[in-house]
Length: 60
Image 1: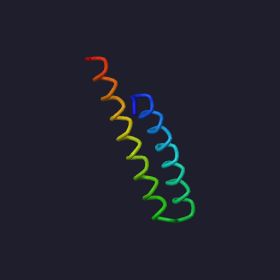
Image 2: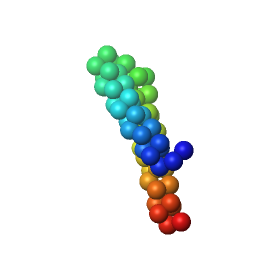
Image 3: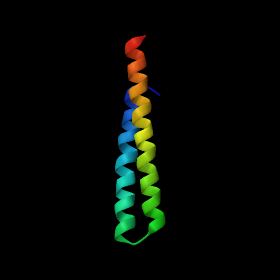
Image 4: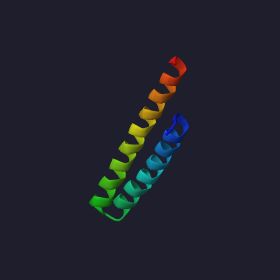
């Protein structure tokens, strides 16, 4: 996957994760809240991965 694809996936995971986290808080569902937080972290990782790919392509 390229830089743009990684960053788009990251944004999707961050949004979906935040929605899960908020819904988990609203329904007092700790498992769903934790799943949302984990999905947001996955999105952050994908964002970093995309940034690294972009930086490497600029250098090559």
